[in-house]
Amino acid sequence: MLLKEILDKSLQFNKNSIEFDDLKINEISRDSTVDNTGKAYFCLTHDLEKAKLRCEQALKNGALVVFSDFNLPFEKCVKVEDCRDLFANSCANFYHRACDKLKIVGITGTNGKTTTSHVVAEILKRNGKKVGVIGTSGVFYNGKVQECPLTTPDADFLHKTFSEMLDDGVEYVIMEVSAHAIDQKRINGIKFELGVLTNVTQDHLDYFKTFEAYEKTKLSFLTSEHIKKGIVCADDKCARKLIGNTDVPILTYGLFSPSDVFAIDICCSMNGTHFVGNVCDCVVDIKTNLVGQYNVYNSLASLAVCQCLGLNEEQLVRGINFINPVEGRFNVININGRYAVIDFAHSPDSMMNVLKAARELTDKKVYVVFGCGGNRDKGKRPQMGKIAEKYADYVCLTDDNPRLEKSLDIIADIEKGMKKPHFVETDRYKAIKKMIEFAKPGDIVIIAGKGAEKYQEIGTEKRPYNDFESVYNYFEESNPIKNRNNKEYYGC
Image 1 (cartoon, one colour):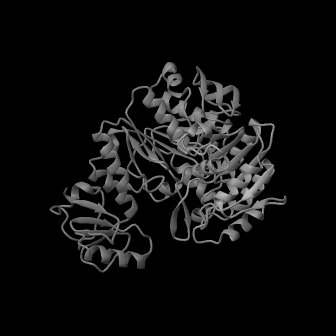
Image 2: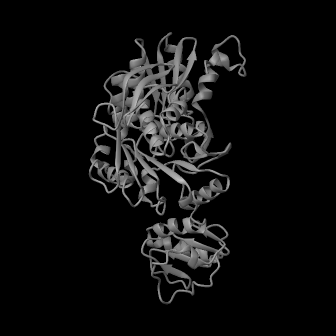
């Protein structure tokens, strides 16, 4: 493809830069270390010294032209106003703007993105639609599964995926939109059919530094630059700021504030949830395997999305009733009357939601096993400790993904918010085993933080590990009938 077909025609370049019209590009690159022969390289760093090194390296590795935010002393290096924005739009153009031919729904928020994406996709698929999903759990479409490098991938991966989905007949793409992706302009150039904001609570302050900056980034997604129409939770004080204060139409959902989409007669159990939903005056009787009030919110958001996409009352009910939870999101395992619940909760708000749900589901004891990620937002650690001891009867602090931090240093940060006695066991499997052994029939053991992850990040390594396997291994060790292939014992 000719470079002039990839780039935005409105861009202005240095007069001394190379001739663009006849330059044929076979690929777009953002990695200076690989073979860049025949490629256009985009330098995405905002650091001048790093930009010099990377652009020089890309040229040595065969790049035909390099773009950056700086005036660099290289013949084929072009300064542009915003290289990240240019890269995102160029990727869209390189893949013939496949994104414009798909109906794309973007879901952002501190919590609920993955579950809401899953529920929306399932409702559409059960009604005969061809759907692709991009998010934390991976890329899924038409029976194909692919790992996703980030919750919201970089623009080159994203638009290549859109192109492949379009070629395979996909009509709708449901994708998670992270705050990092918004800030780093990975989604620029995409016009989302719908944008959903589930909530904004503290997370990722290691990157954004202040909650205000994080909130501003999240809210900026629901503007006409990115979406055609917005759906927000009216019960969330941050999301509520958008009502009447953005340049796109807004639909609301909630339980306690006046909303376009709401639920009544909510009944939750360990087996699922039943409620009556009102979706813009369309009344639906909902029975779902999703557990807890926070999943009622996720369900309402999903129903709102699907109605906006044209589904009627019958299709909504057909799509959502008896839908199964996402792997790693409040997954219940019955161990001889004790309940182990595996959940990805790793922020103060998500921890509170999961523990409150557990507390409402049993009149027995609630246990929680959790840690916090190393080299991430330290400010949330004492908050999570405080929440854990408030809502759980017994707390065990353990490793999550310690990364380059010492386990006991992370745990000490969590303990700053705690006053009550608790357990400490840095070995995550031993911690889970300890809590399950303490539990009695009817008790709930929340295993929080990692969900369906298949690894633990310790130092610079990703070591094989999975919370589900820890629970199954405990059951195998403690059960006289040791048959790992017979999952009926696990209550799955």
